Length: 177
Image (cartoon, rainbow, N blue to C red):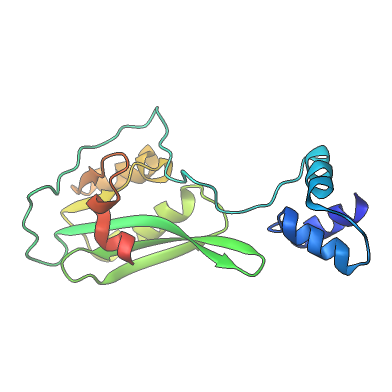
């Protein structure tokens, strides 16, 4: 258990199979069932991208999707954003990018090691200081439904549009990015 704890501290992204391989490299005869049992007993689990990163907060307002049937014929008409993750050798980071739907130009981006809203709010704030759009489209993730994210946009007269639940194609350009 001490060896598992030490390795977990160095590489928290290691799952059961990598831990088994590590212990075997050190000369210990272990199998996956034993390592899994010990990790559970110690309350350790691999840190990795889990599904449903776009869970919304039920207390936050959800805005309607405004882009259905809309002809996008100029820059700064519609911007869109989303969060994805980038796998690194020792874990991962989250990437939030803002894209212009007409030009497909990335207007700005931010990286974070956590999914809190602060890095999204800061990045969008920086972009909207120098230019502005008419409609800002996001998914219904908690980072984008918080009033700390939506209110500055509304104060600048920007309309907010949100994808329907489970509708990745509503935000296809930033999803492709």
